[in-house]
Length: 349
Image (cartoon, rainbow, N blue to C red; front, side, top):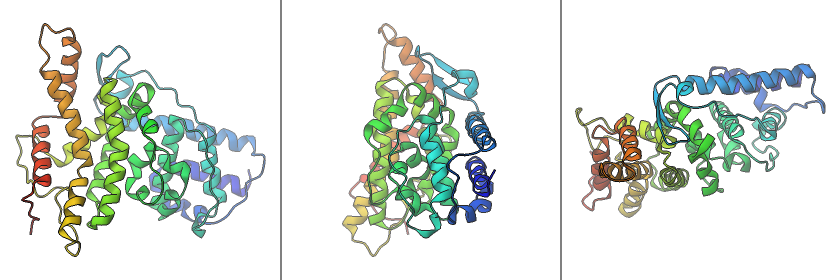
C-alpha cells in the first residue's frame, strides 16, 4: 500500500468518524498521486470501510424507536431494523471518484479539478453527504459548493444546506422526489434522528443578512417542497420524519410554554436592510414551517375520514403516525406562520 493509498483509506474512514476530521485535514489540503492500479489490500480496506460505515450510520441513526410505512401501507413501529427490510446499499463509481478526488485534487488550493458528472445511487448520496460534512469541518466548504456532483444530490443539501446555498444549480425536483418512496423513504426514515439534528442546527445558524437569508430560503424550499408533495402522494410521510422531528425541537407541545418571537424564524435581521427586504426574507424563511403545515393539512384530512369511508383504515394509520409529532405543535406552527406573514410585524427588541 503506497502512502497515497494510506491517505485514501484514512479519508474513507474519516467519512464515518467525524471526530477524526482534524487528523485528515492536512491530507485533504495537499496533493497526492494515487497509483493507476490500487493494491488488493487497499480495495479490501475501502470495501470494508464503506460497507460497515454505512451500516453503522444507519444503525446509529435508527436505534431510537420510530415509525415507518411498509410496502402494503401498514404502519410499523420500533427500531429501524425492526420496522423495515434492509435497503440495498450499492456503493457506485461516484463514491470512489469522490474519495479519489478528495485525496488527489489538492483541495487547499481553492481551485481543485472538477469531479465530473456521474450517476448517484442512494448509497452514493449518503457518502457524498458524509464527505460534504467532513470537508466543511476542515473549512473546505466552498470547495464542496463548487462541485456539480455535490450540488445535484438532495441528501448533501439536507445535511449541509448552509454550505451549499449560493450561486449554482439546485437539485432537480425529480432527484428530490425519488427519496420520497421505496428505498429512499426507508433510508430517510432510518436517518430521521440524525437528519433532524443537522437540519435544526442549520436553522439555528440562520444568517441575519436578509439577502443571504433569501438565498438560503430558496434552497430550503427546493429540497423540501418536492419531497413533501411526493411523500404525501405516495402515502409515505415517514420520509419527512426528519422535518417533523426538527420542528419539534423548536416548537414545544401545547403542554409547554411557547415564546413565539424566540424562534429561528423570528430572530431580528440586519436593521441596515430595508424593511421590505427584511419582511421578504422573513416570510421566505418559513420554508420548513410551510412544508410542515402541508403535512399537518394531510393529518387533518386523515382525521376527517369517517368510519364508513373506504379508506378508513389507511386514514387511521396516518392519524397514528402524525400523532407522534403533533401534540399541538401543528396549531402552533400555523400561529407562527400567521405571525411572521402578518402585516403588523414588529421585531423583538
